[in-house]
Image (cartoon, rainbow, N blue to C red):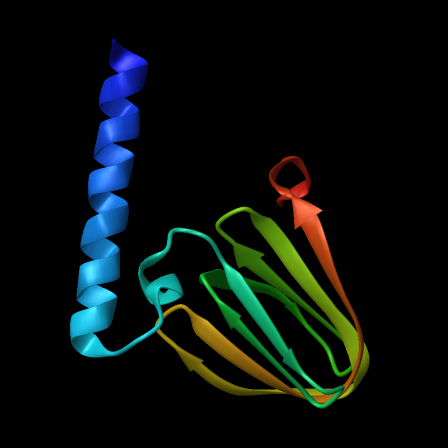
Length: 105
């Protein structure tokens, strides 16, 4: 019985977030509890759902996200913006790694 209640609540939340996103004309992912990583070519990465910056060097940036950590490897990396839970990195991006919650420092 509990499982069906949880499933019901989850679907109600999902429908609510869909209605809000439609009304505001924004992607439904904006209301999602998961982190989102967008990589634009090899020059920019945007990480939504960032909780904190754990490491920041010119060749590596480590970000704590809800599910664990995101590590961006590259050259001349610069944090352009950090607004709320959204970080924009620019530079030469060579790799993006996801580390699970058990590895979270």
